[in-house]
Length: 262
Image (tube, rainbow, N blue to C red; front, side):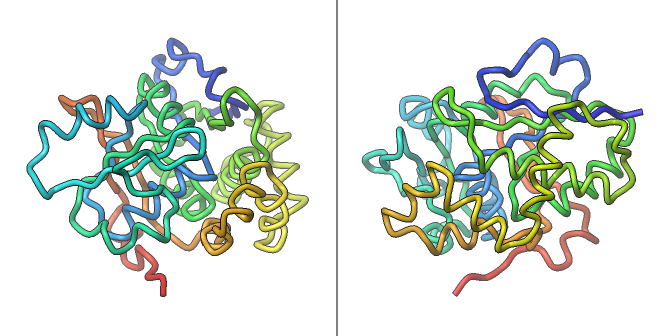
């Protein structure tokens, strides 16, 4: 029987434990994992997560000219020469491109979790489809839901996203008895705000959400808060460059994949 755990910050990731056949799901709701999910729904071929700006430039050396776009931030500031990772600004540049993405927390968490047997990307946008996929493909494996946090700090929005995924896993046949205390706490918190209005209250009250509101990103916040609208299943696949994230959704799930903004 599968067990479901929640890790509160990327600093708590136990790489050796993940390597013991665990399935990992990384959440960085504001912004990295929401942006990755959106990018794939916008038609990006793949997303390469990197730890920092220098690693991003190393990655593009092996990519054909014109085949990629650099997207990233560090400590909330867009990296010079990169696109901002705010998802709505990326729709027009994503189609058919490989996106090299560098963020302060989310992509670092993804790189730390690469020892897992399977590594998925979670967000409010795709948690419903992701839960169905996990319950079908990993019914007996231990699921570790990782909240990226922010520079070592707990993030309310990631905890909310983790709780939403737990709720959807329960809806798809997993049992509450399979939850660790941390997973149960995330689920109970989500249940208190289990609507888009509730989600908006959580996201806009969180530290990063307040920052986004102050910098004119309210529309991005509203988009990120749309629960279960995408059927994208982003999964990290090993490559010679370390790994890239692609949509592995079943064709049935992909029938209505993506959501045009405008």
